[in-house]
Length: 337
Image (cartoon, rainbow, N blue to C red):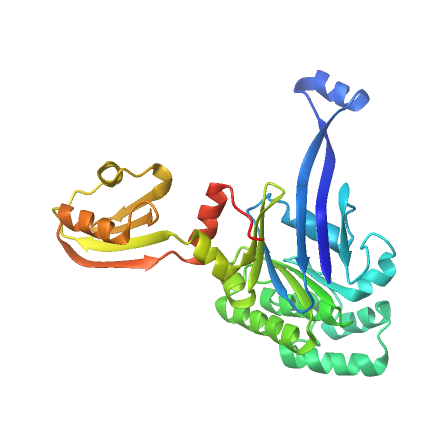
């Protein structure tokens, strides 16, 4: 369905020297600098999959999505979606995809939402019967009835996000690109949107590429993630494999009495751990220590802690997926073929 092969995108940036002289020089003899936003991105998404496409700010996610949707042309490499190259024959291609870019709406601000959908119906050349069935389906999945006659400018953020997803799905696209679809929303609205995405995916086999900073979106919606950093693939595989391969971090939580005087340096020196293998937090008498269990076994960590102080309560748990991803970025990543 989706093939991205060695995508690279470069931009030219004018470099200005300081002062008035630098301004004149930039005007008449501008010095150009090449900025690489994506250097070598490759992945394949089969039909009907929800792929989590993640990375830190500035990693190149938005650039890749814009190349996949046809907004940007790759400097080198190629992407092919459902047999089509996005930059070629864009009029036909855009009828097969839908896109939602965070809080940047595609809706007409002063039109009632229903009228916006009528305009989109004509743009996408959806016939009357299909439009009627489609709106019934979208009303059911996204619960649009309560605000469908309201002007877009009067909608809450959660309502507008549901309206935007409906607009992107109006023409029954084969591929849906969702860029931060739950950003800034409360817990209830987030859950409604996640349920809608799952239902659309299940009932229509719509292929979804989801970019998000909300790890809950990834855990609830995606079986597989592609992670990029500094314009390159860092990881491509399942969440389960990610936990198995990079989930060595454990978290020790305990409470002591007032006499304890525990420090990060004490644990590092006593256990001979590097800075990257131990993170120490202390709030009054409550301690939280994240440590690399590949370097120091859980039993040894417990024994050492209990040898230093008496504890009122103590527990050990596995690292959550957010911590695993954070550690993977620190380590420079790995691929999972």
